[in-house]
Image 1 (tube, rainbow, N blue to C red):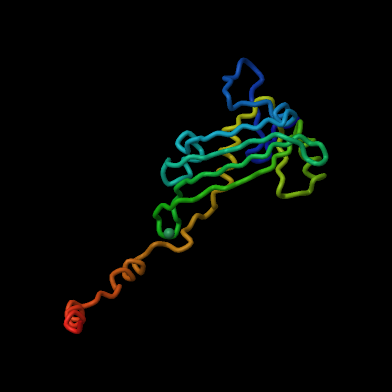
Image 2 (cartoon, rainbow, N blue to C red):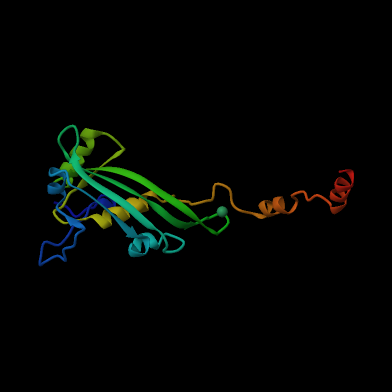
Length: 186
Ligand SMILES: [Zn+2]
């Protein structure tokens, strides 16, 4: 087995000693086999890699992780992540709200060799094949999903600028003389 990783999806944990177990660490294969489903909310501020990429540490993510199998019987996890973050516009350098609404299908493989084989078999860019572990951290998975959902070069669709303010100022006001004239005619 090699240590060569395949993106951030290959997670490896030390088999030595006791891991600090939390409610967010799962046996990925058992989770898929039992078709388990969990959901939760995680603050952006609690995700150090994500909050480093955002304009401030505000916002929260709602996630749902569902276990199951694909049509060929491969164990898989379906992860949806939604929420709002603030990111910096690279054009005008002000922050703006960016909604994350992402869903991924992650097929589980026992090791890197079978991950490559399944990947070739499925031949589907929409599906990620990951090496599953008995100590998969859901929160790390959620953070990866959110990071992948962020735009590489964030920009406002339309940057707020002076022309918006000018538009407000030039709104027509009726002159007091015209109003007086209207009163006299009644
Ligand atoms: Zn902008």
